[in-house]
Amino acid sequence: MTRRDLDSRTQTLERTHTQRPRLFRVLLLNDDYTPMEFVVMVLQRYFRKAEQEAELIMLAVHHKGQGVAGVYTRDVAETKVAQVMNHARRDGHPLRVVAEPEP
Ligand code: TYC
Image (cartoon, rainbow, N blue to C red; front, top):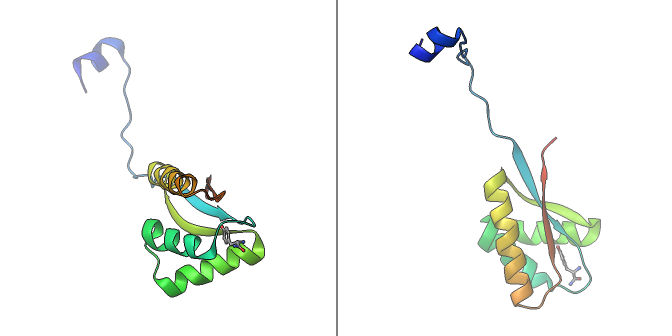
C-alpha cells in the first residue's frame, strides 16, 4: 500500500488474471476492377500468405463478396488497412480493405 493509499483510504485491487487484447479481422472486399494478381500480391506481401493460399482467399472474395485476409490486434490491423489502401490507390485500383472486431 502506498502513502497515498493510506492517506485517501483508497486502494487499487490487483488483477489476478491477464486479459488478451481484442482482435480485429482485416477484410478484403470485392470489386469489379482490381486485378486478381494485385489482390494475390497483397495477400502475399502484407498478410504473409503462400501463393496457393493467397489465390484461394482472392477467389473466395471474388465469389462471395468479402473474405478474411488476417486477424490482428487493433494497431496492426489498422496499419495493414492503411498500407494496403495506400498501395492500391498508388496503383490506381479501387480495392477496399476494412478492419472489424472479432465477435
Ligand atoms: N473481382 C475482381 C476481378 O474480377 C478481383 C478481386 C478479388 C477484386 C478480390 C477485389 O478483394 C478483391 N478482377
